[in-house]
Amino acid sequence: MSVEEVEKRIEALLPRAAGLDACIKFDLKGEGVFLVDATEDPVTLSREDESADCTITIKSKDLLKMMNGKLDPMLAFSIGKLKVRGDMGLAMKLTKLFD
Image 1 (cartoon, one colour):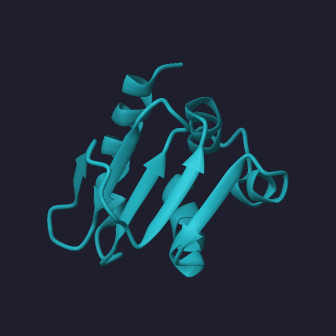
Image 2 (cartoon, helix red, strand yellow; image 1 turned 90 degrees about the vertical axis):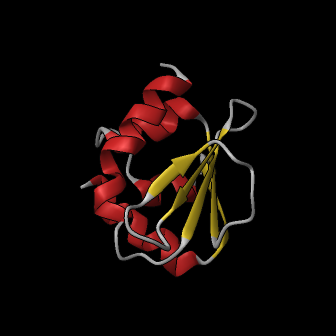
Protein backbone atom coordinates (compact mmCIF):
# COMPACT_ATOMS: atom_id res chain seq x y z
CA MET A 1 0.00 0.00 0.00
CA SER A 2 1.42 3.29 -1.05
CA VAL A 3 0.73 6.96 -0.63
CA GLU A 4 0.14 7.10 -4.39
CA GLU A 5 -2.63 4.52 -4.01
CA VAL A 6 -4.21 6.64 -1.27
CA GLU A 7 -3.99 9.69 -3.54
CA LYS A 8 -5.77 7.85 -6.37
CA ARG A 9 -8.53 6.70 -4.03
CA ILE A 10 -9.04 10.21 -2.62
CA GLU A 11 -9.11 11.67 -6.15
CA ALA A 12 -11.88 9.21 -7.05
CA LEU A 13 -13.92 10.44 -4.09
CA LEU A 14 -13.54 14.18 -4.80
CA PRO A 15 -16.89 14.56 -6.62
CA ARG A 16 -18.65 13.15 -3.55
CA ALA A 17 -17.10 15.89 -1.40
CA ALA A 18 -18.78 18.66 -3.39
CA GLY A 19 -21.00 20.75 -1.16
CA LEU A 20 -19.00 20.19 2.04
CA ASP A 21 -17.79 23.81 1.79
CA ALA A 22 -14.68 23.05 3.85
CA CYS A 23 -11.02 22.05 3.67
CA ILE A 24 -10.09 18.63 4.98
CA LYS A 25 -6.52 17.56 5.60
CA PHE A 26 -5.42 13.94 5.75
CA ASP A 27 -2.16 13.69 7.70
CA LEU A 28 -0.67 10.27 6.96
CA LYS A 29 1.69 10.21 9.97
CA GLY A 30 4.97 11.08 8.29
CA GLU A 31 4.02 9.59 4.90
CA GLY A 32 2.60 12.80 3.50
CA VAL A 33 -0.35 15.15 3.65
CA PHE A 34 -3.37 15.52 1.38
CA LEU A 35 -5.56 18.61 1.40
CA VAL A 36 -9.06 18.32 -0.02
CA ASP A 37 -10.47 21.76 -0.78
CA ALA A 38 -14.22 21.48 -1.09
CA THR A 39 -14.86 25.22 -0.73
CA GLU A 40 -15.24 25.65 -4.48
CA ASP A 41 -16.39 23.62 -7.45
CA PRO A 42 -14.62 21.54 -8.60
CA VAL A 43 -13.20 20.06 -5.41
CA THR A 44 -9.39 19.95 -5.56
CA LEU A 45 -6.69 17.77 -4.03
CA SER A 46 -3.16 18.88 -3.23
CA ARG A 47 -0.22 17.80 -1.12
CA GLU A 48 -0.03 21.21 0.56
CA ASP A 49 0.30 21.21 4.34
CA GLU A 50 -1.99 24.18 4.96
CA SER A 51 -4.60 24.93 7.57
CA ALA A 52 -7.88 23.05 7.29
CA ASP A 53 -11.29 23.01 8.92
CA CYS A 54 -10.70 19.40 9.94
CA THR A 55 -7.50 17.35 10.10
CA ILE A 56 -7.67 13.56 10.05
CA THR A 57 -4.47 11.88 11.25
CA ILE A 58 -4.23 8.24 10.21
CA LYS A 59 -1.73 5.80 8.70
CA SER A 60 -2.13 5.30 4.94
CA LYS A 61 -2.83 1.58 5.35
CA ASP A 62 -5.66 2.30 7.80
CA LEU A 63 -7.13 4.99 5.55
CA LEU A 64 -7.17 2.52 2.66
CA LYS A 65 -8.87 -0.05 4.90
CA MET A 66 -11.55 2.54 5.72
CA MET A 67 -12.01 3.39 2.05
CA ASN A 68 -12.35 -0.31 1.24
CA GLY A 69 -14.92 -0.88 3.99
CA LYS A 70 -12.52 -3.05 6.01
CA LEU A 71 -12.20 -0.62 8.94
CA ASP A 72 -15.13 1.21 10.50
CA PRO A 73 -14.29 4.92 10.98
CA MET A 74 -15.91 5.04 14.44
CA LEU A 75 -13.97 1.97 15.56
CA ALA A 76 -10.73 3.45 14.18
CA PHE A 77 -11.42 6.63 16.17
CA SER A 78 -12.28 4.79 19.39
CA ILE A 79 -9.14 2.63 19.32
CA GLY A 80 -6.86 5.53 18.43
CA LYS A 81 -6.02 4.62 14.82
CA LEU A 82 -7.73 7.81 13.66
CA LYS A 83 -7.43 11.22 15.31
CA VAL A 84 -9.49 14.30 14.50
CA ARG A 85 -8.55 17.93 15.04
CA GLY A 86 -11.01 20.68 14.25
CA ASP A 87 -14.61 20.31 13.14
CA MET A 88 -15.83 16.94 14.47
CA GLY A 89 -19.16 17.36 12.66
CA LEU A 90 -17.28 17.64 9.38
CA ALA A 91 -15.33 14.48 10.24
CA MET A 92 -18.65 12.67 10.74
CA LYS A 93 -19.79 13.80 7.28
CA LEU A 94 -16.62 12.32 5.78
CA THR A 95 -17.70 8.82 6.75
CA LYS A 96 -20.47 9.10 4.15
CA LEU A 97 -17.84 9.57 1.41
CA PHE A 98 -16.55 6.07 2.03
CA ASP A 99 -19.94 4.32 1.66
